[in-house]
Figure 1: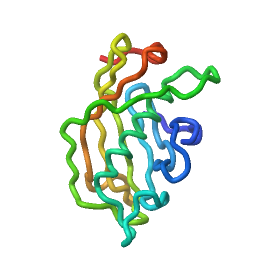
Figure 2: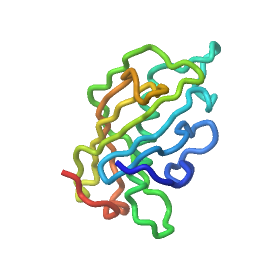
Figure 3: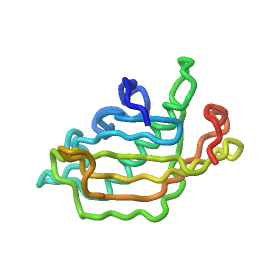
Figure 4: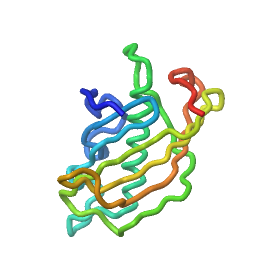
Length: 159
């Protein structure tokens, strides 16, 4: 996986304002992408006590998948590739909430995909980011996204 300068997250996913939950892309290659989330930087999911419910992990993962697929898209100045979450399998949340200020590392790895069908499966994990790297596994699961017919020829087929 390579670490380099990546476009701002706003250029990779359609979310804006408080619904933009990822902070930045950390690493990317043809099969996987890692991104950072600073819990509470966006206040839209925050509870009164400052925590964010663990189900927000699903949105963190979805946004990381969107960033991955758009990093694979040709850089021809066209708009971002739209995608739609169509299935979630084996989602495991290993705690009930995230604390404000925690730094999370969200990782997605494309495991299957067929451009002709326009569906891609990604295995995603979220780890607490510590001073020495990744620490506790906080969430994991498989997400399937659907890409509309008009956008299907943007990336190589993964098996």
